[in-house]
Image 1 (tube, rainbow over the protein chains, first blue to last red):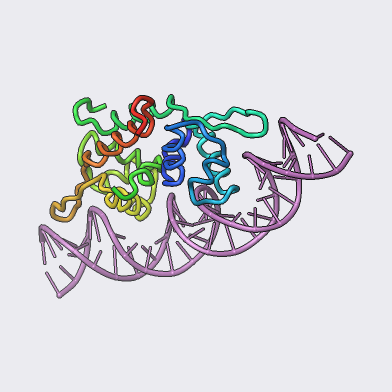
Image 2: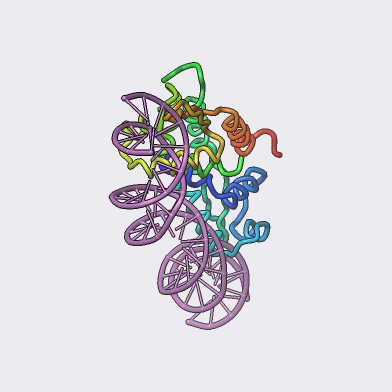
Amino acid sequence: MADVYQALSSSVRRDILALLKKQDLSAGDIAEQLDVGRSTLSGHLNVLKSADLVATQRQGTTIMYSLKTSVVEDVLNQLYSLFSKDNKE
Amino acid sequence: MADVYQALSSSVRRDILALLKKQDLSAGDIAEQLDVGRSTLSGHLNVLKSADLVATQRQGTTIMYSLKTSVVEDVLNQLYSLFSKDNKE
DNA sequence: TCGTTATTTCGCTAAATTACGAAATAAGCT
DNA sequence: AGCTTATTTCGTAATTTAGCGAAATAACGA
C-alpha cells in the first residue's frame, strides 16, 4: 500500500472514487462528470490504480473502472491505531 | 478540515504523529528522533498544525506539541462513507 | 542588558505534482 | 485494410513540496 495517502490527497481523485462508489464507469463517463481533460483524468486514474484503489476491466473498446476497497481497510486501521489514545503502541 | 489528506501524505509527518501519540514532545525532541533538519521539521509541524492534527502549548522557552484527534475522526468517517459498499450515498 | 537555548522565518534549490493539447495506441466495425 | 471511438502516452509549463543553512525571533536566567 505504497502511497494511498498521496492518492487520496487530491480532491479530483476523491471525486472519482465517489463516482465509482455508485457504479462502475469508463474513463469517458468520468471525464464527462468531472471538469478535467481526458489526459489529465487518465493520469489521475493511473495514480489510483497504482495505489490499488481502483481496478480496471476491458470491455471491448472501453475500459471500466471500479472501486477497490481492500487497501482502504488497511488505511482505516492504520489511522485508527495512529490516533487512538488508549493502546499506546 | 482543509487538507488533512495532504498533511497525512508525508511519511515524515506520520512519523511525527506516531511519536506524539506516545507523549507530548518539543520540536527539539522530535528532531532528535527523526533524521531531519530543524527548519525542515518546523515546516512539517506547521503543516500538521494547519491541518489541525497537532496542538501547541508554550512552556517557557520550549513549545510542546501534542496530538489532536478530532479531525481524524472526521477523516475516518469520510473514508468509511466513501468506500462502504452498502449505503450508496 | 547580555548570553544562551529553542524554534521559526527566509531565501534558495531540487524534485514532484498537476494540467493541457497533440500524437500514438487499441479494439471493433464495415 | 481503412475508419471510428476510447484511452493513454508524450512533451511542456506552472505550481507545490521538501530540504537545507543562515539569520531572525522569543523566553529565560545571570
